[in-house]
Image 1 (cartoon, one colour):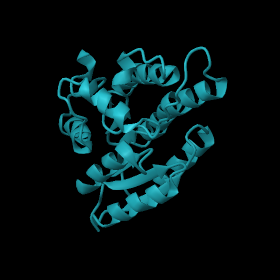
Image 2 (spheres, rainbow, N blue to C red):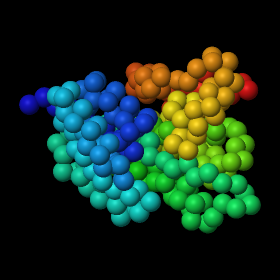
Image 3 (spheres, rainbow, N blue to C red):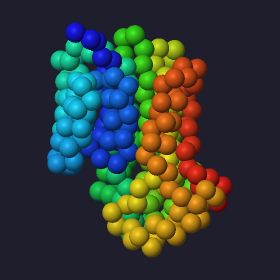
Length: 240
């Protein structure tokens, strides 16, 4: 039986997480596909990966609960594939402002966007016996002051700092990097007009394609001399 290296992708049911999972599956990785609420989307992604003739395991977990992170990685222990990649893609983006954002909204953003990647990385690194790669999904917003999304922007800025700390601490066997996309997919509560206005401000005048973000992951896989870095893929958003 062919041995497939294993990739764990959190938040892999849809959007960028799905794109990362499919990209890795096409390269022959076995996939542990994590999801939380998006059952139908997760099953659809699971079925699509199965068509690629690679092993795939579907696991539901609330990553804001440490015991469920531990349970997710216990599934890894039951698989016969060596863990080589962790992609921390799961995140939440609560809208609000500093005057009205609630404590639960703040805590949810920090617990899922920052604390969960740390403990997932901790669990993954303990299982990457022959080395591996951890990639955190950041956002160009980490370098901005988005007053409408204070918890999100702070959590992503902290995630980039965590990426550097993890990279230094887990070297040389485990590399840790981040990818910071710009505009890729509109949020559910953003109108088409609002989305087009945002995209029109970009120097490249278009949103990113999903494969262009996945290509950044491929770059980090291929270049084994990169660690502690955030790869920005934003169409020039950081220039405006």
